[in-house]
Amino acid sequence: MKLGDLAAVPPAMRYQITSALTMLPRDGGVLDGVPLERLARMIDDTERWVGVDPSLAEIGYWMIQAKQPVELRRRGCIWLTRFPSAETAKQLATLVADATTPEPVREQATWTLGYRQLRGMHPSTLWTPDAVQIADEALGKLADAATTAGKIASEQLPHALRHVQSEMTAALFAKAPGLWGDSLEAFASAPLARVLFMSISDIAAQHRMRVLRLIAATLGEEAVPLLVSRSAEAPIDERLEMLFLAIALGGEQHLGRLEDTLAGMKFADLLRQRAKWHVQNRGVVPTVRGLRIARSTAVIPVAERVAKCRQAADDLGALTKFARHPEAYLYKMWGWMVRGAGDPVRARELVSAHPESQSIVRELYLEDLARRGRVKQLTVAAQTLKAADIGALHLAIHGRPFAALELAATARLHTPELVCARALACYRAGRPELTHRILAEDMPPSEITTDEALSTYPGPHEKWMIEHAPELQPAIGALAGGLPGVLGLAKPAPEDAEPDLASLEPTFAVVRRLGRGLPGSTVYLAGEFKHMDKDAIAKAVEAAGARLVNGPFPGTDYYVHGDWCLVQTIAQLERQGARRIRHGELEGV
Image: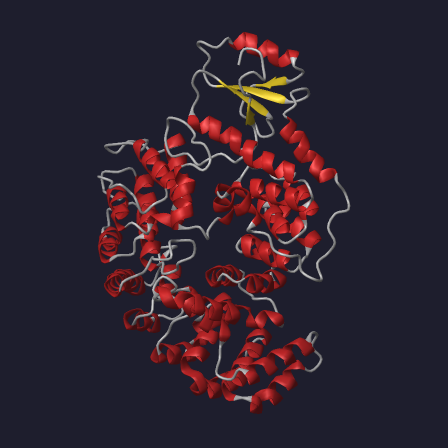
C-alpha cells in the first residue's frame, strides 16, 4: 500500500492517517489496544475529508484483504463508505458473496454496499451509476438467498436495502412481503405496492404504518379505494393513518370518515389540523418523499443537494406539528437533512419538535439562537451540547460580549473559537488592551502535523484551512488576520435581543488568565528531564505557591516543557488550556 502526497487533505488529517497506519499490525497480527483506538479515531475524524482524494480508497482495499485481522477488515469496510466507486462496489460484493468471509466483515460490507447517504462525508462524494448497479446486484443476490431460505440471517441487510431502488429487489419483496417488512420504507414499484396492500396483514405490526405510507406514496389515487375499504377493520392507529392517506390522495371528500373516527377522541383538534394540511397538500405523502431524498443524498448530483435537503427537511418535519413521529430514527434523518440544507431556521424547527436532536444540528441551532438574541437559551444549550466555545463566539459576534465571556469561562478546550470569542468580546466590552494581549499571548494550539514539535499558530493545518476551506471554521482565519480579522466577524445585536449581563466579572477572568500568576495554580512537568534539573524545578514550583500534578489532567494551569516531550502530550495540555511556563518565569526553566 502506497500513499501519495495527500495534498487534497488537510495537513492534520495527513498526519493522523499516516500515524494510525504505521501502528497497524502486519501479516495478520491482532488489532487491539492503542492501535485500534487510534485507527477508530482516525476513521471518525477524517470522515469529512478523505473522500476528496480517491487514491485513499487503496487504504480500504488493503485493510479488507483476507490476510488481515477481522477487526481491521471490518474497519476497512467502514473506510470504503467514503469511496463509493465501481471498484469499491466490486470488492465489497466479492466479500459478501464469499461464504468464508467472517460474519462481522460481511455485515459491515453489506451495510456499506447499501449506504447511499452523504451525512458528514465530503461534499464531492457521489455514487456513480455503475457503482449503484454493482452494489444493487450484490445486495439483490443476498436478498434472493434469504427469500429462498425463508429467513434473514443478516442484521444489516434489511436496513441496507432501505436505500435500494431496483426492480429486482422489489420483485423479491413481493415474493415474501412478511419477511421483508423491515426493508420497506422509501422505495417500491407499483406491482410491489399492490402486493403489499393485499398482504398487509402479513406485515409485522411494527412495520405496518411505514408500509402503508409507502403503498400510498407509490400508488397515488389508485390506493384510495383500498385504504378506505380496509380502514374500518384496522386497529385505531392504522385506521387513522389510512384515513389521513385517503384524504391526502383523494381530497376532502374523505373527511367525513375521519370525523366519525375522531368522535370522542383526545387531541382530535390536532388530528383535524393534520387532515387540513393533507387537503392543502394533496398528493403528498411527506415522510416517504423526504426519506427518498434522505436515503440517497450521495446519489443526488452535488449541485442539487442543498435544495433537495431543504425539501426533505420540510417533508420530514411537516407532520410533527400534529403528532410525534412513531419511529425515532426519523428525527435523525430529519437532522441530517437540516445539516445538508445548512439552515439555522430549519434547525430551530427540528429542535422545537424534538429537543433530543440538538446534537445533530448543534452549530446551526446555536447560530439561530444568537441571531435572534436568545442569550439565556443559547447559554444553556451550549453548555448542554459541550459547545461553550462555539456559543461564546456567537454571542460575541452578535453583540453580547459579557455573556460571551461568562460562557467562555466554562469551556473545556482552548479552541480557535474560544480565543476568537474572548478577543472579540473583550473589544466589544471596552477592553481592547485585553484583545491585543490575547492575540499576542494566548492563541490556541495549532493542530499536530508532525512528531517533531507543535507549530506556532497558525500552523500548516490552519494555513491550509484558510486557503482551501475558510467557511468551515471562520475563527481560524479571523485569528490569523489579527485584530482586523477578529473585528470583521462582528455584527449588530438583534433589535429584540435579550440584554447582556450587567457585570464586569467575566472580564476579570480574562485578566486573571493573562496575568499568569503562579500562586494557587497547578503545574505539570512534561516529558523527560535529562539536562534540566527536575527536582530543582519542582522545588521552585512549590516555592512559588503552585502545586505539582502528576499527569496532563484537564484543568492544569501551566506546564514545564522538559528536554524532550511527545508532541501529543503538549497538544493535549494546550488544548485543555494549560500554558507553557516561559523562560525566566520560574527558577531553573
